[in-house]
Image (cartoon, rainbow, N blue to C red; front, side, top):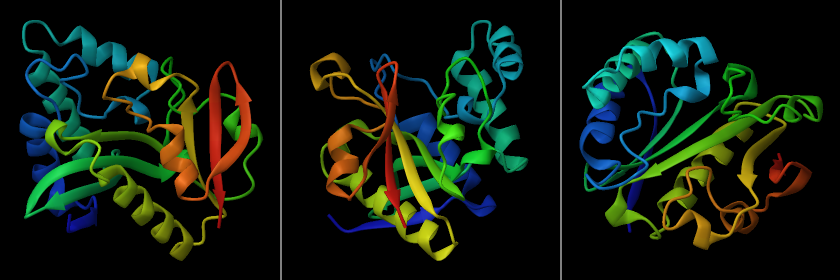
Length: 199
């Protein structure tokens, strides 16, 4: 599959929203709707967003995502196939992520960094394209850009959980994804493994 990977820039904000509006999840997917806002929101910001949901979950999440995109608070990469967005990877400097109850960055990660660290906290792949190498292509681009931008390492934060328990959707990416691209465990705590690739 011939994929084009693009770093999220302001001119792609509407494409990002369209992807999460229409493609990221099927209507019956229990993981949606989601607009990948929580990794950079504090617990208070998440609570405020949730308090506004009412009968329009998707609309509220869309609205908050749009505001965050305008403020540059969502970072990562979109994957395109035949000009349509089919995948997303939330990746940025570890310092851009908020400490919140969801712990997209585990508490112990900050204590063991080895320099400027690019963190990968989430993947969202359109259901019909899962298992086709989209996450691999996204992660390869993250690694390439991190190296070019002077990062010391790229990290992912993987739950030690079986594929059976996740079903067909593991938003942090399975351990084998990281292993095949040269990542190795750097630390583990409470079932969360920091997978690191030194650059």
